[in-house]
Image (tube, rainbow, N blue to C red):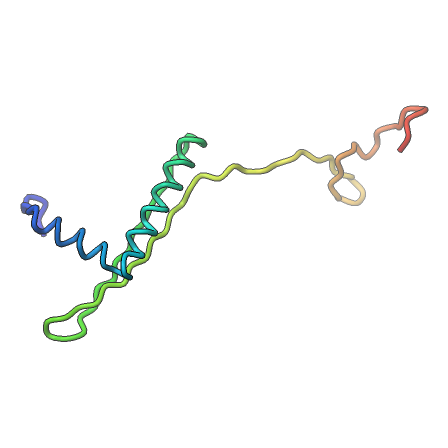
Length: 108
């Protein structure tokens, strides 16, 4: 299909009606949920989100097809991090500096 080929309103309506019918509306519901999650995450994190809609179309008879849909999305996530000191003998992480002296009178 060339980029200059016109798409008619009736073709858009046919797509929307088919999209709403896949899985008794499940594909449309899943897409709407994904859109809400992506918009919310993007607004909070100020990073891009993506939604991918995959439609697989198979011919099952001379005048019949099936459509199978899948929706996936990627949202920005907040990374949880903490700094650690590393013991140079054991190479194990610790919240306390390995060679730090303990002050007198401080319970350990």
